[in-house]
Figure 1 (cartoon, rainbow, N blue to C red):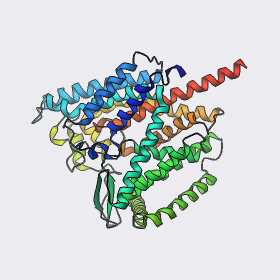
Figure 2 (cartoon, helix red, strand yellow; figure 1 turned 180 degrees about the horizontal axis):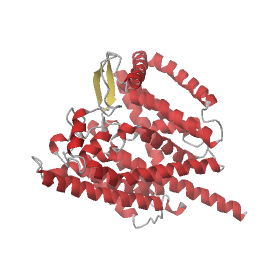
Figure 3 (cartoon, rainbow, N blue to C red; figure 1 turned 45 degrees about the horizontal axis):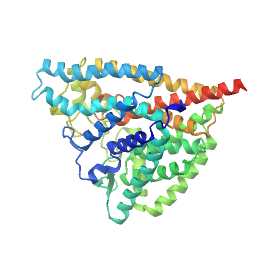
Figure 4 (cartoon, rainbow, N blue to C red; figure 1 turned 45 degrees about the vertical axis):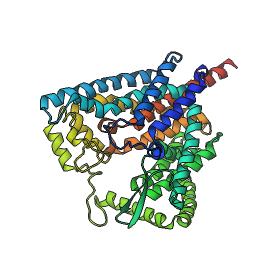
Amino acid sequence: MDNLKNKYPVIDYLFWITFFLFTNPGGILEALGEDTSKAGTIDARDFLFLVIFGLFFIITYVTTIRDINYNKATGYLAVFGIYYFFVFGFIIPELKETPGYSLFLFIKKSRKTLYSLLMFAIVYRFFIRSYIVFFRIYLLSSFVILTLFIVGFITGFEILPVERFNRGFVNIDRIFMVSEGFLPLLIPMGAAAIVFKSDFRWRNVVLINFALMFIVYLLSITRRDIIGTVIYFFIGMILFNYFQHKPIIPIKKIISVGFLFILFGFFISFAFPKYADAGVKGVKEAVHIVQYGETSTGKADVRLGLGKEFMQNLIIDNLYFGTGFDNRWRGTGDKQGYETSDYPFLSAIAMTGIVGILIFLPIYILLVRNILYDIKFIRNNKVDFRSFHFFIFVYLIIYFIYDLLQYMNWFLPVSLSRSIKWYSFFAMYLATRYIFYANWKNKEEKLIST
């Protein structure tokens, strides 16, 4: 595998820089004058994708990788892509005589779905050949973006665009990035580095970026992200004890990590007192919702209970093949948009029907089977938890375990046409598996030869 890495370093650096611009972390493109908010509008990301695809086309001639799981996933996604573009996008709307439908409109608005599917193959190959380059650019760019965002909030001199709106139950403005891009990946990275006591060159940079990203979560007062950070740590601690053949409930780990959170909490309370208080209130609200299904003010939360009535009616009326493409319903989270981040599971069934869900299901089965195999393998073998190759493997295992636990988000890659992040993370997971097991095999062969 070593002959694949950095064979064309200029191409690798050019790809990852272009890729991160494409994912638009911190709203870089908006800062440069682009408007990426409208799904159907041609923007800079279309040009960037052409560059990305061109670079991918070049490296396909110099990389040959035999990975059964990658080949299976590619086949499953190809079948889903055929269903999405021909059945969901053409046949069903024609049969239903959907008002305002046109094939041109579907292609224009759903091209990001094509980007997502293609990005799976692109990211997989580039990650295997230049994952070191990925981490260099990712960690450096993340530090710069997060620092600019936080400093802009403190000083009022905003280089990156900031979105503000009031969070009702705490009466304080929520501070958002226009786009997070791949920045949320820093949270499971930080959890893995701390829990498994990773020891590699960029560990401290990972931890600094983790802290900065968590501050951004506090400024946004996003309950699911704040609580999600804690859940990532719990998943990591449970895995650590399981790998070590220790009791599943890691009391010592919980105490040590809890102490770190307390220290960090003191720092936040001094640096951002209003937002620290708002974050605590947000967590209490989230606990109240989980316990009683509603906020403390009596407002019902339909996300956890999958209780979005108009979507349920759509599912009943279009059970087998879904609604098909319908431009009237495609939004970015508005009250009548079923392609929305708040209700992806219901959206997926409503849009593509039971048939569409079943066609995508093999991807989830492949993901779950691989994760279970990986957990068993690590438990039964003497793996160096502090190594870099283990780190890049285990943080993605942690990420996808949490992703699978969020039942309300199941099939998000089906319902959200711009799911480039999910497909890219899935590609990275399969690539890290390939890297991890290839390195393990090399070590075993060296031991046998000696």
